[in-house]
Image (cartoon, rainbow, N blue to C red; front, side, top):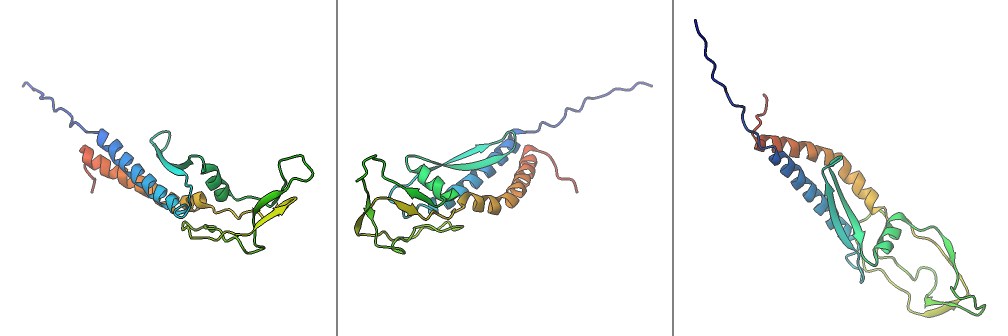
Length: 176
């Protein structure tokens, strides 16, 4: 009795589809985060530019960074500023700080802690001169922390969903 074997070629899987699905999910996540962060500066005259960055390795990641000349201001507001004294830069004993000030409560910030919205705010109008001032500090706005707490739990679910969608598009079959 003789036997003959006919080779059965393995199915070709399009693994690139998995990568494309995960990249697509990362782009969508980064875009949503950028839009939220852009709300924080919607009423600012000078705004930082927010740039999206994604990575597949070592783990899937989507981040948004503030960029530009005023990015440091946004970053200081995000992290908060401790109360501190401010003195004139000059060594001249008669040097004074000069800025508008109408007394306590005359400055209303455009942003508030744990909120992505940006309002009109209010600035004092009366020019004043001081030998030094004690800045009260700024409570951290915590925008990045708020995004992390809102997106982190859903992020890994979205990654798993993108992986499954990519595997199905690549030609794998779902087990029942």
